[in-house]
Length: 245
Image (tube, rainbow, N blue to C red):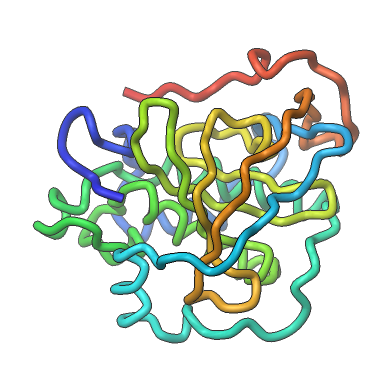
């Protein structure tokens, strides 16, 4: 993925919530129940992503693995999809929204003076800054802190309708794969998104990547995360996307 200033900026600028320590605290100290969480979508009978064979590792992730070797090893333990409990649903929504509204969106060139530098946003200086893959790295780390297994939290490369490359976090569950995206606070089933899916991390080795097969057609629906109960909400157009300046 290439992040460039202007039309190829993959992450839109959002409001900052303070210095790095205050921003990091926002991820863990936000009181539950004070404000409505965004929606977690669901599609009846939804299928998980079908993966293909091994494929190329993104150059930014290769460099990241050289600096964070412990994050790029063979995975230990179970690799089965998660059971989507109310607690896991809540954590997915809470972390996605908190990270989205904590990070200053900026290109690698603006932050580090180079292209394709994957880094945790809290390593970017006095302000939490990053582009799309940096949001993903932080969400992945925060959800692991909350007990979600690494094999269920996979960095995923997609292509947006305008052809621009983008990174999101896929969460593998028994109800299908869900997408945590810095461009919306809602968490959508992967088949309800507008993206073309290219590749993601292997479930068995964090430093290896696999291709993703074309997705089947699926009629979307919506369920509210707070209730934990599915509710038919019609077409995909009913899911509101967050627009940031």
